[in-house]
Length: 285
Image (cartoon, rainbow, N blue to C red; front, top):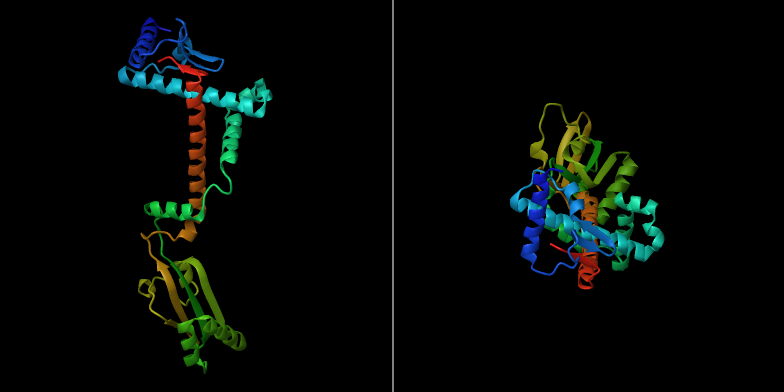
């Protein structure tokens, strides 16, 4: 290590220490922090300090590194205390450095904190409402229904009345009528791309049907001797907010991830503060 870099590290340590204004608990040793039986010395810091840092950036980097070092070691010691001495043997220490034992401890924190669920349905909908700007449609989607029948069907007037009203009784009567007369009825109760909905109709290539993307009652198309009636009950157009049911899995995962992070942070902060108060951890900066 160059003489200039050694002098830089010493200056950083003395500069930060001068800002803290509390006694050095290490009796003159070149130790920057302690967490239980583990110590962090200046020589350890020299090995990891980026060479291109200067001034305030260097001071901030040292403070953050020492703080993170103390927290990581306290987590390892907490895991050893909770799960037994075998958590600290050579194999599990290697696993810890690969985040395995840390993951086990974090899961323990979550299990000790969560009683029924990580979140409620209200939490999910609140998250969705707060992040509506992130859930934007890039296509048109619809819900609706399509019925196709012979154009000379004698009960067209009654069929149209039923198809327009579409309460439970009207739906049942239409289903019975379709089954008896062997014509098709397709209900789209889940969100479908508008292009997919148009595929149920006798549309033509190179024609646009933007004018049909409307909630305007029964609309009609024909194809030879067959008449198609269709109704769009709900629609969302590109640029609007994606309906909750289409992003519920993403919302659920996001809320769970955020909640886990909050629990883990609160648990680690509690261990960290307790260790500082009880002098099981000391930061000499």
